[in-house]
Amino acid sequence: MTQRKPSVLFVCVRNGGKSQMAAGLMRQAAGDAVEVHSAGTDPGEKINALSAETLAEAGADMTGETPKSIDPGLIRRVDLIVTLGRDARVEVPEGVELRNWDTDEPSERGIEGIERMRLVRDDIARRVEALHSELTARN
Image 1 (cartoon, rainbow, N blue to C red):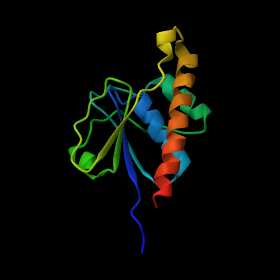
Image 2: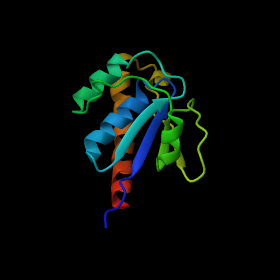
Image 3: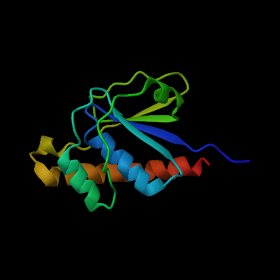
């Protein structure tokens, strides 16, 4: 008997940075053991270049990704929705778990640019590793 693969949807507002980074890091950690998606509540026009650069430094990839809206069908069938930051708000259907990762925001401490994005990436990476372990232990 095969068990169903766990699924997660990472959501931020623009879907150009944090949620894309989380999805890329989860794909890197889980391979095809976890079904991974990302979306935005108000998607932007393009991926944040510094997000992509720092993700590549960690060996993960978001090449070919573009910001996208939340798919109503997808939101009903994933196991878990993770919002990143304080601003993304998602109405979650019954039976779907919602978690918020109040991620590090180095700009609040005056840290900007590539250094800021590396700190954001590292915070998300730690959370993704823990979530990966949790999701794969269920199966």
